[in-house]
Image (cartoon, rainbow, N blue to C red):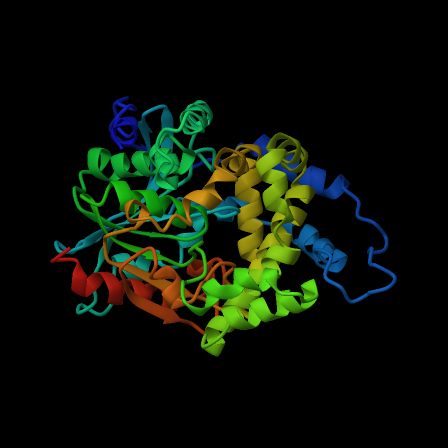
Length: 449
């Protein structure tokens, strides 16, 4: 593993000090967004399969029309004022000029917390949990110094030049020559999420001076937490996830491949396989598994598109605020608890992507990370297992919220909580539940971590 270890030390570009930053949207860009919305027309009638008029084939035309009218009237100046209530900074780290918000508590015992968003999210997703975490009203609860960066290529973070393509080619060449075959070796070479982990660790340690901190993430933020926990555990001491990609646990589920050798119709094999995998799984967790299965079969096409043709989808969607509204709106509606959906949250997200001109760079993370990411995140070898205490919060509309024993294959899982509301964006949908989980996990463990 000497090659892998060396590869983690190759990027020695210095980090610079953080400078205060005030977000401002270009008035001409704002006017352009409003004018393009007014000039954009929608079809007069929706499309639907004749043989199945009730099937879910995407966003509803009626919703798009309603959201379009709302975005035309959206108060961007008020949105900008809300953004500027946060403390924004820029810091040069390696070849990225990284944007982040940094909210410090007045308490001397506050815990530094790195929290990372995913796609199609943003740092703004965490607006509801800042005050409860940084300034808890109950003095017995822990307080936090909250750091929420924008992923490179999102909002005001530049993309940099890394993206790991050449290193992955080198890795593939070495593997073809019979050199280390562990899937962990793929991870320890310069892949995108390892680059991001290193950059965010430099943000916390070198730029902000937090030699010891905790982490939280879902979606891409959760994926990046994995190498942070693996390779930077001398600094990040505790980690919390609200999404976790993994394989089914060993045990009875491990027998499902043998079903393919039985003289049975494929439909029967598929049904039996599902029954075996669900054997003994509590009902609340079964619902989460079925949610994930529904996502795989009917909602994951964007992953293949963005991982193979990111330029095409990026340019097409980025060029039109209505396209952005429709594309991101479909994801927000599908991935959130219907009871917690907020139109204003969607309008803010779409405005942020359009007015910072970053949609086309935001989708590059898929092309730079897939399909090898699927292999990386399911490596159960000893080298691929997280060693620091880990917690997970399962929200009912989350896309990837596995049962407790599945996650426990990869981490020392000390807290697993199931909630009755919320989905893929818990900081927006169920901020109280997420805050309580973070407080109960980090609070009693921080001093000894």
